[in-house]
Image 1 (tube, one colour):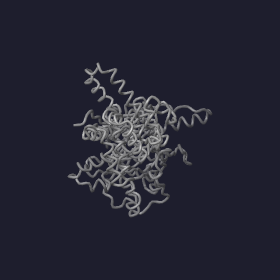
Image 2 (cartoon, helix red, strand yellow; image 1 turned 45 degrees about the horizontal axis):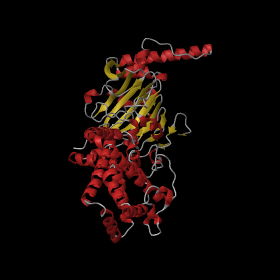
Image 3 (cartoon, rainbow, N blue to C red; image 1 turned 120 degrees about the vertical axis):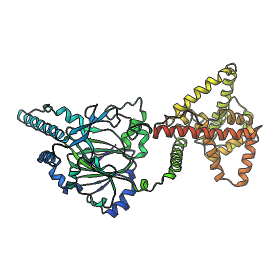
Image 4 (cartoon, one colour; image 1 turned 135 degrees about the horizontal axis):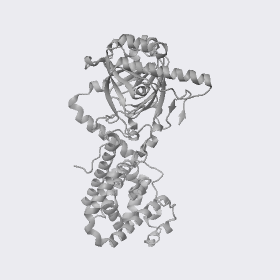
Length: 534
């Protein structure tokens, strides 16, 4: 973790540099924001933008702002507030909080009581030279559990919901948002310190701190797998399932790394933060913090035509699948045999097989030592598997149960990034082999161990192995001539009694691998589980 100079700020070690929040000492123009900031879909901090607002001085709780707000709004106005069932932590799902209607005057009075209690405790501790918790007054508990969240000052869809519309004259539209069509402008206020759960919004968001301080932790949408978003069909689908107080890593293993992909910024009075749509954020608010936010639709969402949604859905899923496939099949340190066996001399590697083939004219003599090791491991796999099959021939009647168990394993594999490759020994062996070396190895096997090649492809090749092998074939094609390609495939497929059966194995394996990756994508990004292809 790379600590930033400002206290409370950090940048995760794995967060791409291009996704880190930009900092602006002075606000850009509307044209600059529209051309250089908004299209990047990366957060940006603008220091002191809201300091000149009337709200910044009139609403300050420590300078009579609570009395001003009470007089400005009036005693008879009711507002909708969030009441937490989990103390000072506000989770977005409906089971963890409730929406309640409270008189604005009652909320302000509870804030005044809380302010008085903290001031009294501060004076007392100063006199006595000790530090102690604030004295709890009648409304102190409510201050910890009640949050004025997203109370409308302006709402384009429902003007009747704007219970605090009167406050708009104290709020100044930032110069760089001029010309935007806002979906809503909202008022946020808390008494005691509180925390809001990790979530994203479906709109661009400009968060403006008017009083107090907010610490905002940000994650790009690409970090979704580490945040375990709630199921897309749920009532709180834009919220993370991971507790911010006591994360359960046994249930959410990837969440251990969520901090490494995050960035935290600190917003003091007057500071403004642009949070692009889809960016996850978790907010800690100090005592008596007041903020305003502006929501507006992004240009992308505005220009998306409904009749194209089905295409966009399929296209985006395909992109995510391609990304996950590339991650799974890229070369990695664990792609050698599990027992850590080092590369052996060729004569020792082939002990127990046809040592006669080590004559000078044997194609095995032309292979690199690492390729010979891979060949030996493949041969061992096939021969060991053949022995196991022979020993278990009498248990074939349990094949249906085995198929059922395999489906369960396939589903569980989707939850683990590396398990698909880790559980496919053939894939692990051939992945590190360079394409042209693999070509030489396959030709040597066809010449020396033709039945082993046949058994390897028809019986041993798993979904990941089929994907990696065919990718290697594509790379071989890029490095050889058309004539060499034709000769290679003619020689390779000559060992099969039914060449079409071999091709079916490869195609079926690739499609099964794609389905496993599809399961993985649905689980990571949508929290949806699919057992089998249609």
